[in-house]
Every structure is written in C-alpha cells, then in structure tokens.
Figure (cartoon, rainbow, N blue to C red):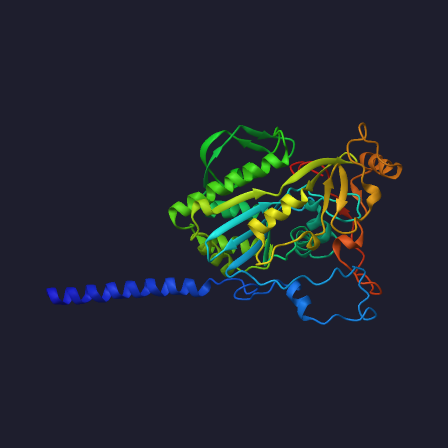
Amino acid sequence: MNKNNWKRWLIIAGGSVAGLMLAVVGGYFLWERPPEIAAGNPVLTELNQSAATPAASPAASPSPTPDRGTAFETARQDGVYTLLLAGSDDGTGNTDTIMVGRLDTVRHTANFVSIPRDTLINIDSPIRKINGVYWTAVYSGASGSEALRRHVKKLTGFDVDCYAVIELDAFQRAVDALGGIWYDVPRRMYYEDGPVIDLQPGYQLLNGEQAMWLCRFRSGYVNGDLDRIEVQHDFLKAAADQFLQLGSIPNIPEVAAILAESMDTNMTASNMAWFARQFLRCRSEDVRFYTAPNTPAYVHDLSYTFLDLYNWIQMINDCLNPTDRPVSEGQLDLVYLRGGEVCCTTAIQGISYFSLGRRESAPAQSGAEEYVEEVEELPEELPPPPESWITETPAGEAPGAAPVPYTAPTDDDWLTEL
C-alpha cells in the first residue's frame, strides 16, 4: 500500500474514532437531564398553587389544619434547585443524617445544611425527634420520604425539589465505585458495642466501608452528634475538593445507577448525572457545609435539639431559600426556646409534655414522669404515634389501614441494636 493510501486510511480511521467519541459524548449529554420538577418552572409547589386556587367554602373543606393565609407571591430564582438528603440506618428506626441542600446552576454555588438528628418537631408523641419520622411512616404503611419531606418543609418554609434517602449499602458501593476518598482521619476511631468500627488516624484512602465507619462514629466526642456532623462535613468537603481538582467524578453513570436503584428518591440516574456535572462547575470555595443553629436541651431525660429561631431563619434565607422572597417566621412550624421557655411559631402540640432538664434537676409533671419510668421498664415495642405524624387525614374521612407496630427510636446512637 503506497503512502497516499496509508494517509487516506489514517484519515478515515481518525475520523471514525472522532465520530464515535462525539456520538458517545453527545449520547451522554442527551441522557443526563435536570429534574422536571424544577427545570424552568418558577413554581414553589403548594405556595404558588394555593395562590392560584380559589379558596373553598368551609363546608367543602373540613381540614383540621387552621388556615394561616396565603404567602406572598414567590418567584423562583433562575437555575436554583433544592435537595433533601438523608441517611437511613438500615431499618433500625432512625435517619441520623439529614441535610438540606441548594445548588445554584447559574452562579455555580452549592450549600448544604445539616439538621441535627435530635431536632424537636411539633408533634404530640412520646418521642419528637426528626430522625424518627422516616421509619415511623414506613412501619405504618405510609411514605417515609414524604413524611420527612413534609416535616422538613415545616422547619424551612419551602418544599424541596428533590429528595433521596440513601441506604448504608448504597453509600458503601458508591464510594467504592468512585475509587475511594482520600481523607485525613482526625483520631483513632474504635467501637465494638454494635457494628465494629476500626479506623487509624492519618491521611489515607478510605474505601466504602471505612467511609461509612467515619461518618457513623461518634463515641468519645464531647458534643456527640454535633461533633459527628462536623466530621461528616469535613469528609464531604474533602471529597468535593478531590473531584473538583480532578475536574471529573469517576464512573458517574455507574455511581448514579447504584444510587438510583438503592434509594428512596424522586430522581432518576440521569438526574443525578446532571447534578454531578453541574456540581463540577463549582469552585471548591463555593461548596459550603453548615449546621443549623441550635441549642441542646433535655426534656424528660431525652436529649433534644431546639433550632434557634431567628438565627435559623437567617441561615435559611442566606443559604437555602430558592425564591426571591425571604422566608419568615409565619411560614414555619417550629418549636424553639426563648428565655428558657418552650415556644412555637404555631400552636404547640402536647404542651404538657415539656419539662426541661433531667429528673434530678427538673422534675417532670406526674403524667410525663410515669412515662419516663415506663420507657425504662417496658420493652421497646411501643404502639405507633398519633396519626398526625404520618398523615393529615381531613375530618370526616376514614383513616387508612391500621398501622403495624414499630420500634420507636431511642436516645441511643444508631450504632447500637434497638
């Protein structure tokens, strides 16, 4: 074959390879897509829907929830998406990791705010922690993600666009598919009173199991779960820096498929791949992690976290709010402390429950004190909490099927067996 023929074949081969690469890249970009729930749609779910829907007469709408009025018109900020991310502890009763995120695909910024697992929510139930919402709903035959999403909306004033509750196994597999995460483990981490955790300190490549150990460990921390949240943030920041420096996230389709098939989510694998590519357009300094401002306190010997109302509202508007109108106190259903007293932005449910402190320092009311004794003596199998935690059945309508018994979340860490 003469030189001209070789040149011709090289040009043909090179053109074929280039065409194939273009087809693959083009196919990938056609495959990935933003979630339809918010793409180009300046709607904040129920807020704008309620403004556009004429009010029904009282006789036609016997809802037990009082009408608090319609919010001001809320226009959506261009390119802003909100996410609710939670970590499920394999069905033992808690989602100890709960984060609300905001991704701005125009300004290329990302904020994530952790809501402490012990955050007190406004329900009339023996245990009022937000980490018990998901599995309480699941064990009662309802949607855990919708229940958690509803309670997060009460705390933030807006409904999230996308949600995902990830299982431990999926988290491990995803980290392994990414090739591991380089991280400087800050201390010796060892725990054996449940699933064993065994990590040495120092900079190292963590595989999926080791990354799970790091994010679950809290034994010996001075501030318990709050210190664990800071380690989780540091780990996520290290992972973000690692991939932003690389300019790519390894095996995005594989990781997205793992998560999509293993999560309770309203996102598809193509949605997750699109979010990943948008995330890569951020600079490291524009990816930030926060913890909701809070005050820990004991109620009937159980540790709770009360969100600090006005500092929390400021954080919502600075870091999370997807609209061009600020979230205000009137849009929240939040129990908080003011001058050492328990207050609420709405009508507090079960006010007789609240007696701050431990029994030796702040005796509980007689009924509540009896309940504390029962929690210590009775088996952990308790009847389900009130229906209002799971669904909000309008008056006059028959409730759904009777819920099955569930294992109530305890004040212990999710590492221990219930």
